Amino acid sequence: MRMSLVLGFMAAIVAAQVPAELVPKIREEGQAPKSQVMKHLDELVNGIGPRLTGSENLTRACDWAREKFESFGLKARVEPWGEIAVGFDRGPHAGVMFTTDSDGRRKGENLVFGTNAWTPGTDGWTEGASVLAPKVEAEVDAFVKAAKGAWIVARPGAFLRGKSLTDKAVEAGALGILRDGGENVTTSGNHQTQWEKWPKLPSINVISRQFRAIVARLEGGESVAFGFNVDNRFKKGPVVVSNVIAEITGTEKPDEYVMIGGHIDSWDGARGTTDNGTGTATTIEAARILAAVGAKPRRTIRFMLWSGEEQGLLGSDAHAEKNRAEMDRISVCLVHDGGTNYLSGIIGIPEMVPIFEEILAPVKDLDPMKPFAIKKVDKLPVAGASDHASYTVRGAPGIFWNQAGVANYGYTWHTQNDVFAAAIPEYQRHSSIVIALSALAIANWPTLLPRGTPAPPNVATARRRLGAQFDRSAKGLVVEEVVEGSRGAAAGLQPQDRIVKVDDTVVDNRDQLSSAINVGGTKKTLTVERGGKTLTLTLDFEPKK
Ligand SMILES: [Zn+2]
Image 1 (cartoon, rainbow, N blue to C red):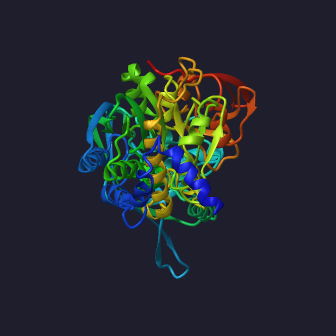
Image 2 (cartoon, rainbow, N blue to C red):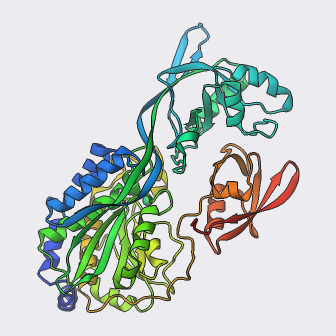
Image 3 (cartoon, protein in one colour):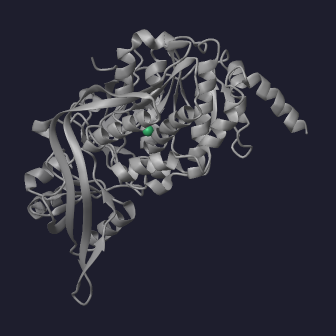
């Protein structure tokens, strides 16, 4: 009884923002059996596949998304924002470890592994013996001899007379390098790869448990051979890359916007499901729901699917920069990019909180098992980990949804586990309804949402990328490779350097390193140990002009 009184009271308030008759319609449209969010996700991640920026899949996905929006009756377009010098497309890959058992029979074991984007595959099935990377000076010459025509196993603490393992392996005529890929094999890659200079040696990231077993066999004196077939394809660019933009035009203020979205690009080690097929699917589904119930927002609701997010928010940065004049007409930019857990809350500056409390009441009321919290913050964070940050730094409020639930995002994020089955249908449906209701409520509010203090100019919006690969099996942060043209290379970082501090913060692993470089100013002092000496390098994360 008490409950229904409260609900009745809320519905009366809500009427001003989301027409009362639309709330149940939106809920019904977004729930089973009407929901289509899992169908969108299936078509995207299984039908098309992973969507690396600069891949053919991404181009297909953008066209697919535009057609989806248009099929709901929205105006939609694929809008180019830039170019990638070298396109990269990935076919299937397979790898086998060959050993000989005590009866002299050859045995094979399939390997779980990945390769980074913009790294070479093999020229068909490529089989050869293997050799451990040397550990001491005395092993180097024998290693160079054995490496010709062999797979190199990059065990911890390789000693290479100051050279990188890759340089040494190329020099020796090796087939490729096997590295410890971690227990979840992550995929990344250097999108600034140039056609003239793309790497030529396969670098195979083997899942830790198998990698450690390989090292143990080789250290025990066993002969181990490998065969790999890795179909990685480079395509001479420039490849045009785009964002997808769709709109439901506002009835009263068509040139004011509520933006909702997520990035459609992904890394390509698996299917790009939780990063970020899930946020793409909810954006498309929110559009479908609002169109299906005939929502007529006062402001324009703009649905954004950015690309180049994984390379440092490139698509959103370009879109926001090109549309600087619009920033004071964007009420909010809400981004879903934290995996499949349900949307569990929103942050707001103090002036936003009472508005959210009022107009997001129907969201709070959706499902008692999925509470929704409005959290006050002094300022909206500008150094964000997703596309909303590109707008926040230019003065338009960008907000990343809070999420909660049973899914383990770390398990799937950028890893071989990011497959369709990782998505939780119930959460996906719920989140789509949250987005549809919130977008409509904010679009109908009498004014634009209040702004916070505008962000200081020149804040680097891009994720700060060092461009270094670390020896995963070494203790601490020992650099294995430095990407040419990266911030790390510009600072003078070298293979075999051990990074020990960022400014005054001691760092011992990659998590600590990335938190330390992502906070505060854009200039960072790195303390590194090199050849028994300690030296300092200056890292500069100012946006490149
Ligand atoms: Zn993401």
